[in-house]
Each structure stands twice: as structure tokens, then as C-alpha cells.
Length: 176
Ligand SMILES: [Cu+2]
Image (cartoon, rainbow, N blue to C red):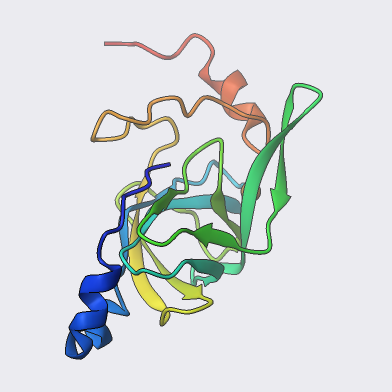
């Protein structure tokens, strides 16, 4: 998690006319969703939320037309096994950022209307406790695809519904 120092508090106070614009300074970057596997009707979406405001906020829910239901989930370790748990909200610190990424926080898409294919776009609406709702699009990427920025490369299998992905992957990784 990246936490940016905030020195803007006093500045904003002195520029009252600007505070209306700054009040909406919640940004989402690098939104993507995992391609669905075979007939599995669940998937997950990931993104980074940046909060440029001087107040903390919370992501309280996400909606998507692509799924019957969307839940905020996290992974926790229990007896060396990664399990998913639903979380009520995700705190976004003032001047900070929170990354939803494989193996950690994610939006669980439950009951996909249709399979998610790489290159598809998944519409998501993010609802916050303070900020106005935000409509974004997440690009579908294959499971195991490398982050194009080369940073978060440890999206190894971590339990939940893609156990069979491991089996399917045996012996067919590198045929070029
Ligand atoms: Cu989940």
C-alpha cells in the first residue's frame, strides 16, 4: 500500500472555491477483471483507488451489470490456507491509495451473466461513504497475466475457485 504525505490541508482551506473540485478527487487506476474459466460463473475485479482528499473515505460496495452480485472480499490465511472472507468496506486513507489485487482485496463477481473473455470490458460502479459514486470499466485479462507495469507478479494460485486451473496447467505451459 502506498501512502502519500498530505500537505494540502492548509492550502485547501485557503482556496475555498477550489474545494468543490478537490472534494471529488478519488481516482481509480489499473482496473481489470480476471477472465472466467470454463463454466465457472464467478470471477474477480481489481483496481487501485487513490484518495487525493484530506479526508479518509471507504469503498462500501460495487455494482456491475456483468454479475448478479458483487461483493468486497479479502483473503486471509487460516492454518496456512488462503480463504476468502467478505468485508464490509475498504478504508481509503486520506491522501493514500489502496490496491485490490490477486491474493488480497478484490471485488468478487458472483453469477456472471456471460463468460469474461480477455479484452472484454466490465462496467463497475464504485460506491463510497463520502465521495460520489464512480463508474469505471475494467479490462478482462487472463488469469496469470503479468501486470503490464511489471510490479505485482505474484498472483499465484491461492485457494478459492481456481484449483482446477493448476491441474489444467500441468505440462502445457511452454509450447513455443
Ligand atoms: Cu472472493
